[in-house]
Structures are given as C-alpha cells and as structure tokens.
Image 1 (spheres, rainbow, N blue to C red):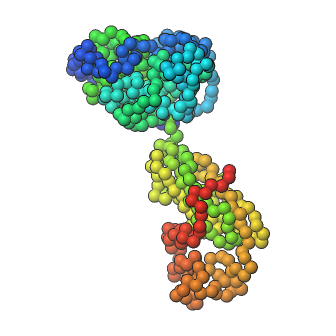
Image 2: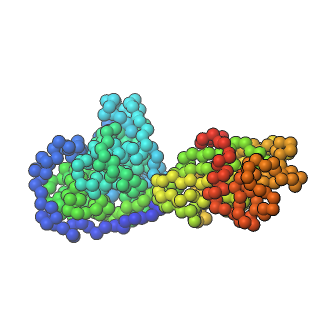
Image 3: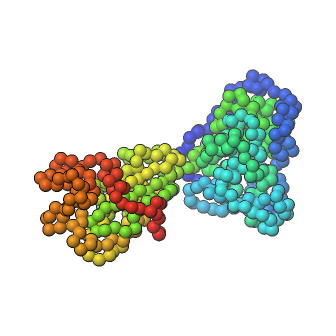
Length: 467
C-alpha cells in the first residue's frame, strides 16, 4: 500500500506523559455504572473479534486470525498477511473501498452467510453505522475519532484480505464489528472528521486494527497503558483499548496520539487522493450553427484533499496539447485550454468551468466531438468530459460570424449584432452578440462575454450528451 501523505508520525507512548493517578482518577465500577445505559455489547461482555467461527468462515480468514493472535509485538500488517498466503497478493496501491459486503445475521438469524441476507453498503456509511454501536456516543470526541479510525482500518483490512465469510467481508455482530442502521450526530461528526484516515505500519502498510474493551497494563502488544493500570483484561487485549481511549481523551490527548499509542510502530495515513474529481452536471449545446458560439458549463465536485485555484486548475483538451475544433479565442485561454475553475474549489466543494465553444465552418451537417479533463499544475485527473455537437451550415444569406455581414455589407439595424441605437459605421471595435469589445477591439472580461453568450443561447438545463 502506498498512502499518499502521512500526516502523523508514530507518537511517543502516552504513558511517559501521565500516570494513572495524575492523568485521570477513576473507579472502574463507578465508571461503568455511569455509562451503563449506553454500554455496547462488546463493552458489556468483552466479545472478541474473530472469536465466532460459525457460519461460512473462509479457511484463509481462520488462518489470518491465528496469525493476528501470534503477531508480536506489533499488529499484523497486510503485507505479512499476503506473505503468509492468507490474503490475495496485489501490487496495486491501496485505494479506500467504495463498498463493503455485510452479512446481516443479527437481522435474519441465518447460520450461513450464503443463505442469509447480505447487504452491499457504502464504506463510509458502514463506518457510521458501526461507531455508535462499538463506542459510546456520549464519550469524548477524541475517543470517538480514535474509534472511527480503528473501525475503518479494521474493516478495510478485511476487505483487502478477501473477507471473513464466503459471501461477505464482515457480519453485523461483535464477531467482527457490530453494525446497525442507526446513527448518532456525535459519532457522525467523528466519522466525517477522520474520513480517509487509516492506521499503517512503518512501511506504510495497512494493519489489522483490532480493539477490545479493556486491554490491561501492559497490553498484549506490550504497550504501557497507565490509565488502565489495575484493570483486568476484558477482551483479547490487542490494539486499541476502548475504555482506555476514553480515559486518554478526557485527560487531554488527541485522537491521533491515542491511535498511534495503541499500535506500536504505527502512524496515520490519509489514503484519499490529493487530486480527484466527480462530475456533478453539465450544460452543453447539442447543435450549433457554423461560425457561431454557444456557452458551456461543466461542474465537478472536488473529491480530493487538495484545493483547486483559478490560477492553477484548468479544463483542457484531452489528450493534452491538442488545439480544439471548438476553440473560441474570446473565452479560452489557449487553443487547448478552455477555462480555469471559477473562484476555485476547496475539498468537498463544487467547482465550475464556464466557457464557450465556437462551431467550425461547414457546408453540410457534421458532428464534432471534443473531450476535456481537469489539469492542475500539469497533472491530469478526474473523468474525461466528452462533448458532441452537430454543426449545421448557415442559412442562405446569413452573414454568420459575430458581427460581419455578407459581401462586406453591414448587418441590418435591429439585429442581434446591432440593436437599435447602435452605430456600426466608423467603429473599429467588433461587436459580439450585442456586446462591443471596446476601443480598437480590446477584449472585455470573460464574464461580460459569457453573460452575452448565455443570454442568447437557449439550452436545456443540465442536458447531458451520450458517452
């Protein structure tokens, strides 16, 4: 796995910074009684991940669990699982899963994943549905964020390793991770705040981010955990201690410190792409008259983690470096560069690329095609946008173009180029759709030209052309 940017290096053990008494005085019995109404099944019973071998558990998943139990003094990595033959080999960089297959055994009561209900759930929605049923929603926000990162990493590891069951990656019980389609605003905030963050080892490989209720002091990975001193192990003792994450959070520790504390040699990596885009909508013409121009607007969601700026992010022809048949010098920045992103776009925002396309001269109807792609500082990304428009000849006697009459004659007064009251005679400045370009043909702002173009062209809203 090659995560694109490591945002946190391995944190110093938290035990160095605080002792159990100084950091947080607590009574285990009183603490659990305080949260009794909200305790999850794992926190009540100490249920172990991977302990239930009923159902269609894959043999490779059984071997993977055994490898996890003997992994010492650090959690099992995906590279180690592949080397041991319990996970499929792959040289491709890690990409966050889009969906996950969940056996809903808690709903249908089935004993076999292949005979029961299996839901394909968007991956981040799955994380949303796990967190409030594994962590306590009223816990400190930093504890909830730590839980979100552990839950996400554990699930992604099972997806990447081929899944726990024949027909599903996970089930919806504490045997893997408890999942319900019931959400909570506080846990939703924690999931959103940590989106794209995963736990990796020193080589940048995804780890099996196990967790359990009480992991003791030290934990099974040999981590000194002062806030859990005196507590009995209540679970398998590996990875994140759920109660410990709450104690560290209430003593002022951040989620990244908590996560890297519990997984020796780990760091947190952002696996999202720096530059990524999803098309949202497009407004395009499907027919043009030769020589005339019409507006185009394409909107993309910034799906990466980097910002788009008007001076560095451009919609350009694809393949790169080729001048387009639709090039319009009035709005394009070059023959192969249609338009910059208007006002930029931060991650999660929608960016707009607005420009005009000008039809080539033709003597008979011709269908022209063009493709565009976003370019940021020389790097291409996002889906290609393909535009297809039929160009038809000008009508007999139509001067065409943008302001010139046929055979050198002036257009009729009152036309789109010369509305009543305008004088063309003696003026050196060309007129485009009723918008004079200024002295000696100086170009106005792109917005002024686009305003005129959008006013004249009649387009169906968000009309999409066939790919």
